[in-house]
Image (cartoon, rainbow, N blue to C red; front, top):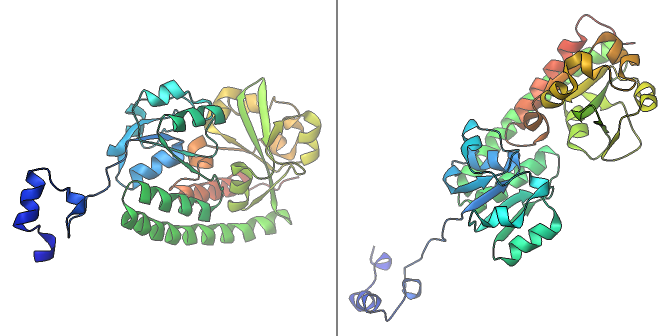
Length: 304
């Protein structure tokens, strides 16, 4: 105990201003708690999962889960941040993934003295765990992050086992892997399909399907020719996109989709955007739900 207490002389010096606590033997000051602006639904979700939500000064508009996050001040959309909006929240840290921007705004924020904690997107389970560990360090909860990571690894094994069981059933039914097409529809005039190196493709694979459209990375506009050539057994969308398209009937009126096996069978699966594509701590749950939705969509039907 003696090593944890200052001597009378040191205590007196401290009171008189002749020494700082950091300079005294056995004394250590905890690092000040960060004041965080979180840009990205998944990073916000991780902060809450670690019990560090009290450190959040503001979030972006994709931070929809948990419900409490919606009550925090907003700095807009993570890809179109403004320096003024972020700095108005007086943060010490901007926590985001590499999808945040624009770059010039991030440079302005850093120049104002705000720490940029920009994490790689890495749309993989291991990448999600890496982000969780780094956020745990940032919010001074490394033990909690390690415990949550262990729980998520166990949950992930359960997800992989479920997908493996249904994968064999679908393979037997179709005679080949399930082909799925992810359609991103913000509006009727802005319809995109997902290619390689996207969160959507990663989720298709994790859920036990293959991307029906190949040959490019990122997103590109949907064309009737590409949709028909892809011949998807199933169409995957977000619930927000499906609503914007006018439900399943509206989605199937988009270029070429009605002429696909998925369109003819009206096989459309939709999950909430952040849940499906966010790669946050609910990832194992999202994979199980996607796998179940694929299985239910094919139940009792044989794709063309």
